[in-house]
Length: 464
Image 1 (tube, rainbow, N blue to C red):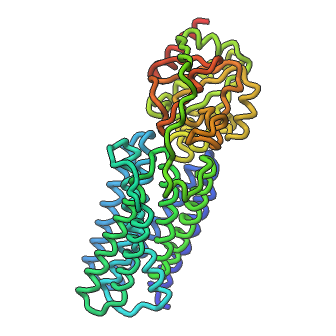
Image 2 (spheres, helix red, strand yellow; image 1 turned 45 degrees about the vertical axis):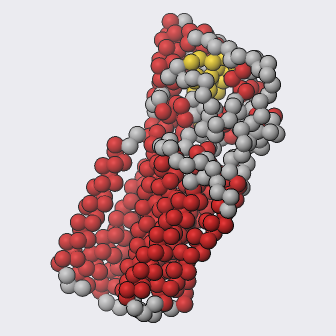
Image 3 (cartoon, rainbow, N blue to C red; image 1 turned 30 degrees about the vertical axis):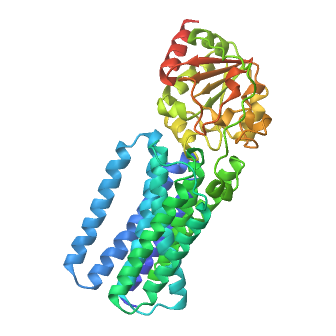
């Protein structure tokens, strides 16, 4: 083994170790920042070692320059974009970066195809999987970004949607196998290029009909696929760092997909192929009107409750109201009110979205309750404050078999004697399903932007 090979192996091992240590640290909010830094340093080390040692081994200063330029350009653009993206758009950024990872995995294998050679059977099988799946993840992730941004995309499914999608995937695999086996450079390039294009279309075709409410599951699904493609690329390139990173991301993405689907009481097959279902049947023609209240009365309800449970939702994130929500919690605690936060697994647009926003505002981690703990707390709470949440507090998920949400575990806020809901208007949730919570007898709505309403509640509390 040469000195360069030994340095590369050592760098890959250290990078893989830092990645695993970083992922372990990310499992807790108090150590998550250190974990992200450790994993980032590991990936940077792997990139520098693989790009620069390869370029130096070939004795090409031009390749060294290109390697540095690629690192600076990619790192600079991603850092600039990440700083400008608000927390409410983090799911879109995660989906976009995940899709770019899939595209990179596909193009890496395509470059090997253009280089020619006779791959071993295992390498052939891995390449046939990695490239089409990476390109499909890229196409599907772009559609997920568009849906999360509420861009207008075609809705509905073709009569043979599943057959068409399966056919596109099969054609992509077949074309890439042909590209690997072909001897003529022109045929390799044409078949490989068409394989990537068809794989991209397969990802688009699979994702376009899926509703926005299912996008968290779809993002996790494509994250797992991208990880597997990267891991297989690592086997092809004999890169331990890529293998470890790809397998860990693939496994975590797969587990996250299962957890998210379970939290919505839907199978992955239902998410990908069966749609979200028709709108819920109306509960009756004599449905009562929502009862509204003002911030001053809401402040009185909260101030004289023994325990308040706050349920944040995407509306809170859009209004950037997490800091005022923490101010409210502190003010209530000074009055002797115990304040807890109920977090639904699919609140927001991605797993952990609400947790990150509340942690940013300084909410202690031990005040955040998961679904089971939250429902137990809701049963004994004096009052509940729902801030911009809709589908995750819809009682039809428990009571109405005709609802598309039926069976989905939700936060049972109606168990509390008094429920306040801060809501911008009378619109439906992200799933497009009506919510009978807003017309319940023990529920009062406070209409307006979450940040503005919370500011007025804070003002009224200070005057009590």
